[in-house]
Amino acid sequence: MLLYIHVPFCRRKCRYCAFYSEPAGRDGTDRFDAWADALCLDMGRKAETLGRPAVNTVFFGGGTPSLLSPSIMGRILDRAAALFSLDADAEISMEANPESMTEAKARGFRAAGVNRVSLGVQALDDALLAAVGRVHDRAGALEAFWALRRAGFDNVGLDFMWGLPGETLQGWKAQIAEAAALAPEHLSCYGLTLEEGTPMFQESATLNLPDEDDAAAMYEEGGALLEAAGYRQYEISNYARPGRECRHNTGYWRGEDYLGLGPSAVSCLDGVRTTQPADLASWLSAVREGRDAGEREVLGFTEKAEELVMLSLRTAAGLDTAAYRALTGRDFLADNGALIAELVRRGMAGLEGGRFFLTRKGMAVSNAVMEQCFETIPQEAER
Ligand code: SF4
Image (cartoon, rainbow, N blue to C red; front, side):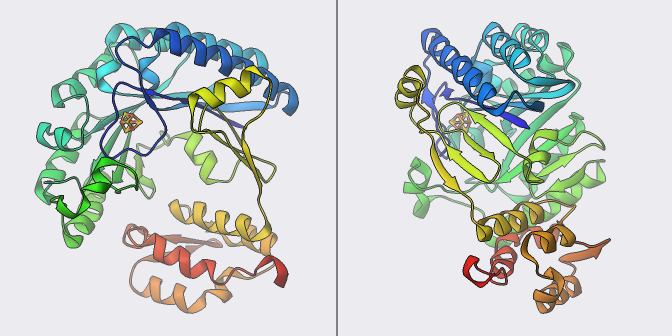
C-alpha cells in the first residue's frame, strides 16, 4: 500500500494553485502540532481497521511539507513505522519549497527518515516566478537545491512549470538545460493549467500566455532536451535518471491501493475512493470526534476501466491489454483499431508485448485519445 500525507499549509497561496492549503504565516507552530496530533490519531485508527498492511512508499505532499519542523516529520514517520509494516527500503518522499528549506532543516528531515525530496522550483527566472506569485526567487531555488545536496540527499527531483505568462520557447529551453546541468535525479515538468477559482483563472483573458504552437513546442522540445541529457520520460510530465523514477507515483499510476491522510487527501482501497474534506477545521473536528468525514464513492465497473485506461496511458509503459481484457472482457486493440492505426501511423503511439503506449507526441494530446478510448468501454448495464 502507498501512504500519502497531506500537509495543508503554505506560506502564501500561489496565484495558479487549486490544491487545498491554508496560509501558515511565519509561525504556524500551534497549528502544525494540532494537525500532526490529529494525523497520528487518524493514522492509528485507519492502520487498525486495515489490519496494519505493508507500506512501501510514504509521500508528504501539500501544501508545503517543508514548512514543518524535522521533529514533527520524525514524529509522524515514527508513528507510521510503529503502525504499518514499513519496508526497510521504503521510499519516503517530501515536497519542499525553496523558501522553507535550509541546510539545517534538510539535515533534520534526512535524520527523520526522508530519503527523497521533490523541490518546487517552477522556474529559474525571477520575472516568471513573480508573475505566478511564487514566494521564492531563482537564487533561493538554487540555494535550496545545493542545501539538499550538502545535507546528503542523493535523490532529489526538481519540479518545473512551462507555459507561464510571458514565457518564450527559448527561455523555457534555457531553463530546462540549466536544470539538467544541475544533475538532479528527477525532473517534473507540468504545463500551467488555469484552474477555476484561482486568481490567474479570473485574469485568463488578459494573461500573456504562449500560443498553442509554442506551448506544444515547449512540451516536445523540452522533453527531447531532457532525454538527450540522460533523463527518461516515464510519464506525461515526469523524467528520471534510470532507476530514479518516483516509486510512490508509479504505484499510483499502476492502480495500487493508497491511503491518504489529512484534509483533502484521497484514498483508494479495494475499489472504494474516499475524499477527506478540504477544510482543516472540519477535518480536525471529525478526527477528534472519531468520525471519518470522508466522502465515499464505490467505483463501478466503468469508472474502474476508465481509470485503468487513463492512468496507464499517462505512462511510457502504457496500457497492458491483457489487464484490460481481464477487467472488461473486451479486446482493447480490436475495439480501438482505427484510432490505434492512425496514432501509430502518425508516430503518436506504439504497440509492444501486448502493451499500447503513447509517444511524447501522443502524450501531448492524451486527453483527446483517452476520451475516444472511453467511448469503447462497455457501460455497467451492457456487461
Ligand atoms: S506552494 Fe504549492 S501547494 Fe502551496 S500554494 Fe503554491 S503551488 Fe499551491
